Length: 139
Image (cartoon, rainbow, N blue to C red; front, side, top):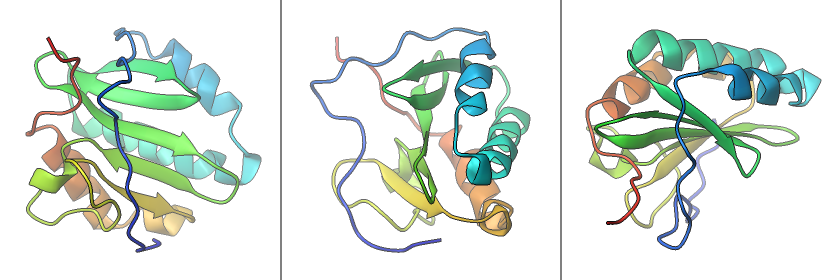
């Protein structure tokens, strides 16, 4: 997992995606990721769904979103050419923060191998994501 500092996360001017309880859009999104990264994306998707009950889903800006109605969007997954970024919108509130991101509350990690995706710390971050507020539309 790459450990560089970079600003990132949800901006205040972007409108959050519309949530749904259907996983169909994410299934379709996963079919379009780079073949080398597909096992990583599939593993992370299953891990998120198995770890956080009651999820809502969305795909917007070619990114997959996972959230809870009462907490907002908790996790964003983005597949690039050589890595999968897992963004935790409330990551700054975690006991042990993901290594990347230094502005706002978002923190993230770049995952390049299935072995990195299976690191126990990834599950810990996902568990912590369910307990903090995520990205919600300002009212």
